[in-house]
Image 1 (cartoon, rainbow, N blue to C red):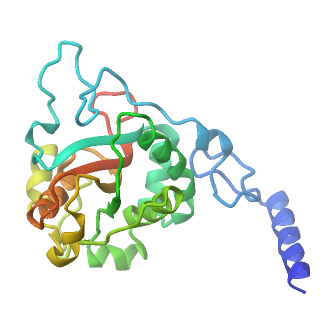
Image 2 (tube, helix red, strand yellow):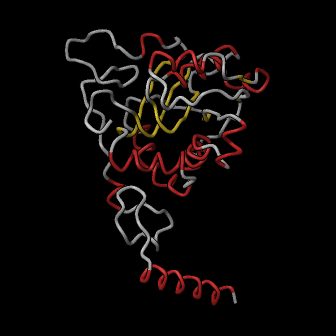
Length: 250
């Protein structure tokens, strides 16, 4: 009986896709209705790499003269390294917007493979715990889920690494989107709280802080400060996308 119902549902989806073909959330192309993830193969395999040369600590593009990185010099010492899987551009930007603002958490499985490849690239240290960047209670209620937590859960399952939900963001404040870079750090300063009792198990240098997109790094820096205050010695940061100032499409 179950097999018959499944065949019926697949047949219904086939007819629905034929009459009203669904579109890829990355590029708008039709024909992804049969896919478990509403993202076409092209968008799942072709993301824009970050330009080089880059800062060895935070991967921010910089000139070949080895000058001081303009981004991570103000980050707390607890943030030892930061990596992103793709530039916030084209299909990657479209998928992040669909996830954050349109409630399409079904795109998350398309974001995980490039994150796995980034962690296994050779220069990212091994990690033992994954900590998602939390959202506020109001935004969690509004959206129904936390994008960073969904990404962290899928990533943890893919890598066999446990999730440590030790951070909270109890206060509501202005969204980072739309704020100038000069105001972003102040907007999230002191916004995160880490549970000291729980984080006692995280006193190793292999804690990975995960978020969907990185712009100035103010959010992950503030989260890392809270973790450091709770006893975490070192933090690595991993995001799916990264905004690159001055790059086309950023």
